[in-house]
Length: 118
Image (cartoon, rainbow, N blue to C red):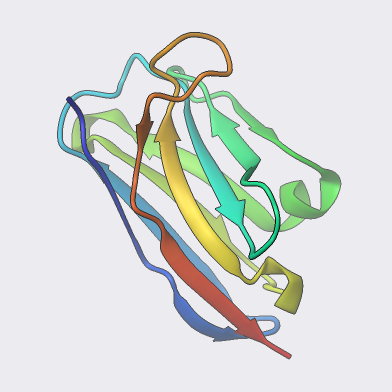
């Protein structure tokens, strides 16, 4: 069993930057990792994924232009650098490991909230 713990969320103003971190309790180097986010009343959505070798993919151009996912396998960590934050980025952000096969995430963190004010 691998535990994922997110950190780095908090309050920000529009235009600010935040860096989210996800620390795994064990090796995740062979898993595709992802950042999801969820707002009240909406499904959790994947916004960024990173392959074991570091290849990144993003949900849409708005995310791609402002956010960067990265990983440090030696530190069992995944990061999400978020720049030029917007109020619509307000959500709870979750880290997940694709441990059950393509598109299936078996390990999840508890989430870290991000609130962006105008």
